[in-house]
Length: 158
Figure 1 (cartoon, rainbow, N blue to C red):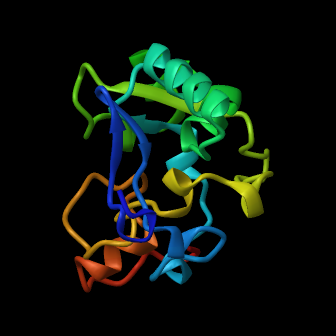
Figure 2: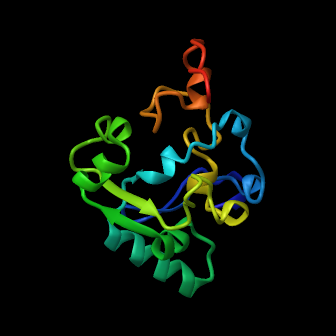
């Protein structure tokens, strides 16, 4: 697979990487719309279970392949649905009841990422990962990315 044109690389059902390499170390298009509220980091939703994340992280580390799963295995903690509801009920209510939910230990008390410059692409690319804006559950009702879908004004104070 040509890494420059890679859209997605899967090992079994687990996601290893899903961005063209031209995005590595760069701001993705529309990143300036982020309100920096931290809502998307209080509850993180991915398809992979904790076991899949650990397995892919271990495999890619051994093979020397950069992977979001290495960061996730080190910094993400699984959440129960109840814990997720306490952290971000707005977002959690929109997600499937059997969703794999996590939180990140790199989210500071101020709602800012403590590993901003080295955060993985799964964080860097939220919510459309370099693709066209589509309707997806956003983590906050005033998420700046929603302006790409809905021209309504953002609430004051954001």
